[in-house]
Length: 446
Image (tube, rainbow, N blue to C red; front, side, top):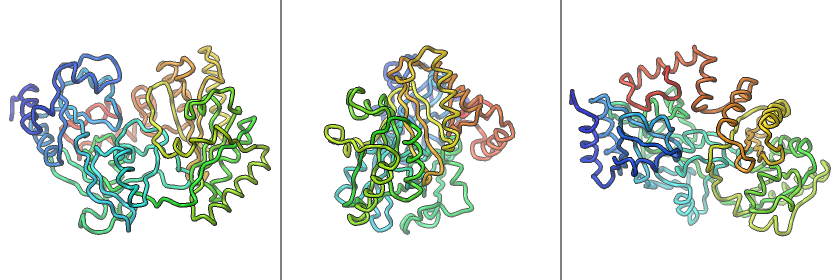
């Protein structure tokens, strides 16, 4: 394969997956990018099986051709100017096994949230609902450590037992599947192993093509309620307290700008701040938890919201929350530091002449109230990408934790920890010495 051109590789890829499953023209490739781009050295291939992925990777390894994948709906703009092969896993959408006894499903990377939920409903099961999904793929969201609405109760990582295509086309099975894919699934990949390297790694060590995703029973005592507050301090105090008392599955606080979008309601009909609570349990226990939540809300000066606002809430809380634009940012922190970061936000939006109450704010408790996920949405405030980038760097510098930083934020974050970048480079040298898997991610130094 020495001396092969990129065009030669693209032709071989078309032979592997079928010419109807390859896009090479700029118009066909443009749909893979959110920005207006004119890619010329790329071909997008949509493999239908793991074996086809293996053949593509083996081909690219032999020729030194770059492979680009993404956990998100669109590829980074910088990829458009590169040469290589984009992999689109949408055809790999098989649900291989629903393990009701061990509450796991084995699914390929192309399975969507909607597809999985439709298959789980007859089994009396459900998967966690994403709170800020940048993809329709269940596996990509889970492997990227994406936030879920029920994060106050359930662990962040919802994937184990991954099937990974390595740099030369070989397969790495993680967790219990390394012994047998027919045995019951452990909720954690037993170690020592390399599994943790793949989580949040953007496929730079290997391409995740299948995973075991955790699923849960559908409880009879399932309900969602809204409580209004006049200020954020009391609402955020309950956001921290209620999960620690094991009363909630979902526990969120939203300002009226954020909630109006989710409920498709006018801001005038909403209180300044709203606590959203989801309760799940057997009926008797669910009744107890709802009663304790109401008592806590009343003691904190909040009030129950009903009527039209309550109607349709269950549907909203049980369908995926997708991120449709880039004019937003989200980070993790401790509850005690939220006011500090809110001050940074206030200073930035004042400088940019953005109205404070036009910025959507969502806070989600996770880890039984040990920490909070904070999201700022500028889509209704006239904010742009430049504002978000500057704000992210300010917040990260002050100590806000960004999981999987991208772009300029990644350059800033990783630039402060050169020793960490060195360790990633050492692993990359072992797992992908030809640098064909998502070269330049998370930063060019890797």
